[in-house]
Image 1 (tube, rainbow, N blue to C red):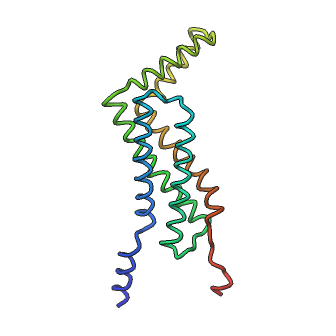
Image 2: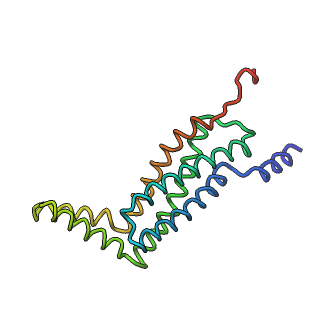
Length: 183
């Protein structure tokens, strides 16, 4: 009888990982569309896209934590549980959007990378940097702006931003059960 009850509960309540994957996948696809627009319309330096992405990630993490707390955790979630859940959303989102960007930049169109490299080099020339400094800086810039460099920095950057957002959002969304009620 206990096994049937546990199986019924498991079928009704998705795991923390599956739930976070759902929100992360949605955000990953949204970020992928934003990234493609940025690549296609050469908006890589546009601050609206940068700030808009941070706001979207914050909304997704906050909404995801709240829904998970209310629907899966009976209205209760610890601060650590909320932070962990938010980070999972960010990680899944980062993997999906970064992988899509990698595929696009590595196999479809790398003009975004070439344009960014040209702008970087022109900026250094305008600043009056020496030829040696420009060459050394451009060597590192080429490595960071390779498709794999963008993939890695996308995962690290989005996960880090998700951590910061989760730390803040969890302070507002945590709802520990009263320890005196359980005693």
